[in-house]
Amino acid sequence: MQKNKSYNIKKITSEVNSKFKKIHQSREIGLSLSREIIGISSRSIRSAQRKDFKSSESLINDGLKKLNSSQKKIKNYSSDINTAFFLDGEKELCEAIFFLSFVSGYKVSKIKMELFSPSSILKGMAEAASELRRTSLDSIRENDLSGSEDYLQIMNEVVDLLESVDYPEGVTQGLRRTTDQLRSVVERTRGDITIALQRNQLEKKIETFMKKVDRKEE
Image (cartoon, rainbow, N blue to C red; front, side):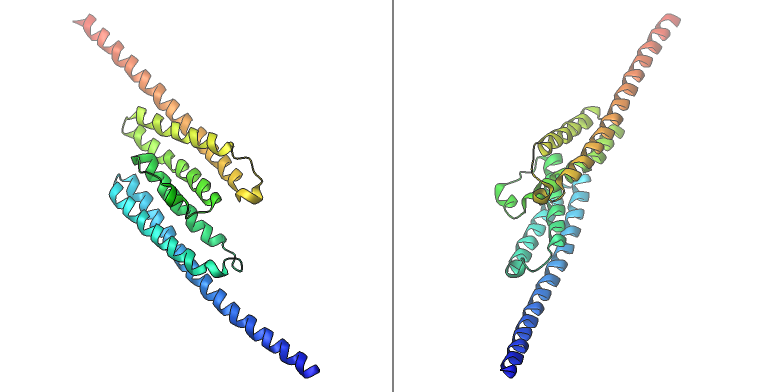
């Protein structure tokens, strides 16, 4: 009886050890692909910031292929792996997709979104909206105040949409905190645009005044 118990324990441990090996291998594959996806997403955003929209879209397509591949490879063991690292890759790729959409009109299809978890989609959207602060400031430097206001409007719209999502943090996985961070970025951007508008109005008034002075001197 004791021998049978010992045998069963050894056999069970051996089988579990084999499963751990497969889980570990799947996790390593997932980690590697997630890092690649994060890198691809970052390059896509930089391309979109340079207005190289074709390269940005090409990188997104590459990221989507890798995401689809990695999901298949870890699918059988997803319940045994802490996949927080994988969600980071999803979120970064969503950010790249939404950012390209915001600045170029790139179409975000339902089929693309089906690859992502709900929290990754909305957190990626929030971070893409935050990234618009830089784009808005670039527009101000280029004296395109109308463009900067358009980007601010998108940022405001995203905040309003995210604030309408009313579920516990355990479901949305930190969305509320991400939304709060975005709201802070929006307020800073609004302040910068307001200052730029006031400065522009002042410059126009000074220019008008100087023209009147020059006419009087003539």
